Length: 432
Image (cartoon, rainbow, N blue to C red):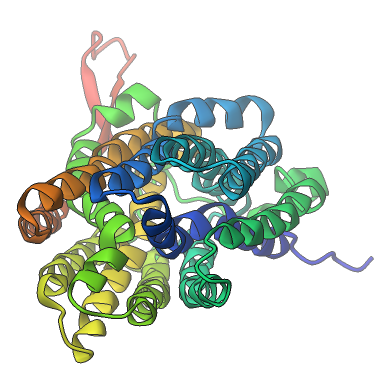
């Protein structure tokens, strides 16, 4: 009997497009659409920043609830809920938004929740169930959807909107068409587990190493069943979470204010959109590097990426010439791409599949909750002082500090109770 091809790669292709639509479009495409919207609706920078801040908050705030939903109803149904919410928000933006507060609700809440439920949490759980040995590669390929979408969408949307006399609502109609295709992929192509199709992870993964052993070539993957509580109180989790503050703030800041900042420096809308496109395509380089997280400990890749992002945040402050439009987006894109894959993969390696949905849900809640403040604060600082400079420099410093913290986020040891009579209830560390 002919052996059927491993369905995980087909599923990964569906995840790639769904991620591009539900997260890539609102994250990268909005930087162009909302800059036209702000001009049309006469929004100040504080209100513009608030809309994106609330969007990023909603990408993370429902994270624990979305993780619980994934565990209860599965990956497929959770993705469908998210896709429907995002499409409803886009329809509202296209038809009904005429004030800043309406944009905050439609874009920030409806599309933000759609990006959360229809994006990373559910898809990462799906990848964790379908891939073991090739998780870093699968994650990097999935996340490349955002980078490719970010490369194509800003100049395309700018061209569409400019050719229609600045009608920014056309951008959201494009999202609706793409969202409908993504929802169809969820319905017809997403499968929960390899066992549902009579297959094994990776198409037949090798046996896991014994407890306490490292994977070949030095990449640590736990074989212990960590609990949620054990994971979040571990030293490694706390250090990794603290290290991510700078880049979380920096990414939301550059997405929320990057285009208008470059316009302030004298660049045209086309040049600003081009810079955002370069940033997005550069994330693919970072994600490609992060795919080596199957062979190199991900936290080392992550630390280097954080330092690169911090340098990009410094360079963007005075990017006044045409030549300056290349170094900073390349560094920011590379840093974010490699960080994103490593940041999502390291907790999976450290704490295991059982605890991962709840761990990553809390992670996204805290990470995006903190990062979501940056666009609002930056908008307030600009309206008050006429410059983003203090905010950019501060976030760059946080990124450098985070890179150092990651060097100390070594693989955790899980404390388990030794139930032997000689131990008398004492705790013993077990490498996990």
